[in-house]
Length: 120
Image 1 (cartoon, rainbow, N blue to C red):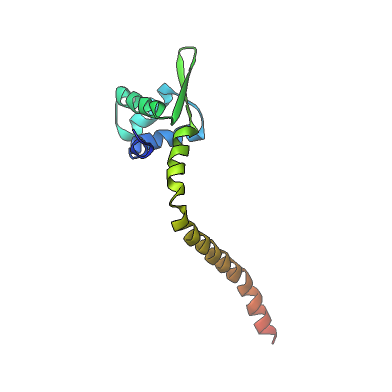
Image 2 (tube, helix red, strand yellow):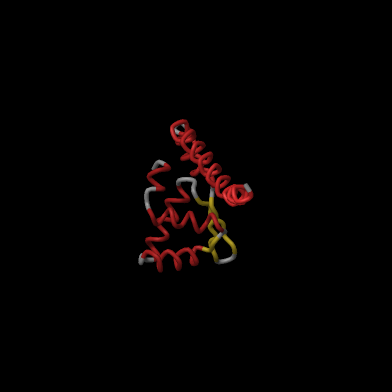
């Protein structure tokens, strides 16, 4: 399975969001995902397996619990693929950042211009 096949599923994306925030026990992931998506424990376990098998999550035993954590390997594979396309959007994002900064500066300067205009 390719990285984007893994990321295409909204349940797996949500699990990754949870794991990005902090490590979580399997039962905690099952509880949260089950409540949000209305799916069973076996279904959540299958999603966790897909994430593990494809380098997006790691698991370790802690007593009787299985603790899941984010594994950056799968995300790095997706990022590597996307890097070939960054040239298309980075200039546009840079231009947007410039326009945002210009707008902020103009809003900051507007009260000063009004005051200077009143003095004249």
